[in-house]
Image (cartoon, rainbow, N blue to C red):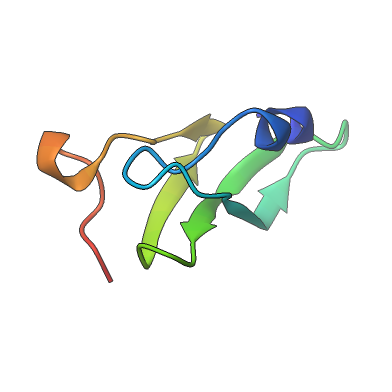
Length: 65
């Protein structure tokens, strides 16, 4: 996933800003693992194999913290 994606995504539940937390990236700076975190909803949206899962909890996404 490219870092520039953070500029256009928002929380699918409250439309708030998402904080990007990176745990692994490749040599080109592409994000491989990490998460998007919504401080308002207290939901973490995982990034696995470079693919963010931004499904809301009611649609099979991550559970609320």
